[in-house]
Image 1 (cartoon, rainbow, N blue to C red):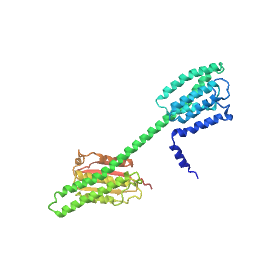
Image 2: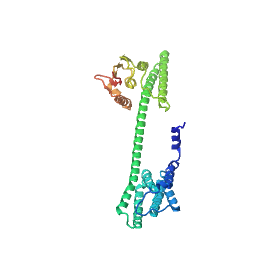
Image 3: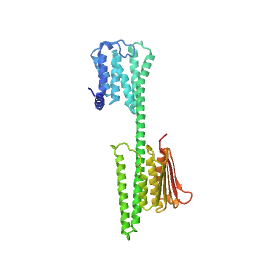
Image 4: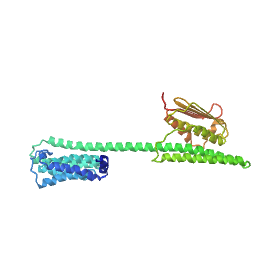
Length: 385
């Protein structure tokens, strides 16, 4: 059984000249068939002339250059036009004269800046050609017929130009889509790196700083250094997972946070010396799309900022799983202005706002009514009853 897909792929891998050659050969063979003797193209009123040796050369000159109509469209148009002119002036009026329309179509589709110059040259060449034909025909053909044929020849030219413009617009659209996709992917990767690296490294820095003051208490020092080691290992694990997602052979990412991961995150922050109260209410939805991951990232970023700017201050994390949404609130005691550190890039909170907005939720972060800082998020889960 013939594998048509493989045959098509093999055909597409062939050089464009080889793929275009059959068109010229088919037209050449059809022209030589007796059935098509009276079906040729005729301009002017010259009587038909029987085929001779020169007619064979003319037919070949009109048909065979079609093999290079895409590789060298200008050469193809020049040769076919020359053959067409001899064809009409000698009165052969062969079927191969239709090749002029194919050559014009290809020139319009594949020529670039030379299209206008070629159009001018064709116009200049057509005028004396039409005058000679008119005189040889003893005025038997009205002038309007020559004008009509000239206009008709620009129809395939215009069609080719339209095809070229359409392809250019489609290529530009694909380029923009690819660029937007790359930009979105880079932004997503930057957010993931920021969320993973910043949280773990911040925890390690805080734990290491605390360990400097525990040299007199070896047991507590060993516990602190063990916490740094555990945090570093978790960072490596998360980074390895992120790098796996960047692998093109990796499957589709399931953007969810596993149950209990929030509590583990809180415990990690507590080990870093941050007093955190955690409340999680409700039952997580079986299918919540990206909402679980976004909620996790909100808590992660808020706890990271608490470690950075309000280390040792009381922090509370409240997560409520509802039927159609997840609400998150992370409050930290202390001065709210300290969270707007001039050394921060603002990427974290801005990235969270964009994540939540994409899901159609609401996000806010700012000083609390009294002292402290609060981060709130309402994240639709996408589930519907």
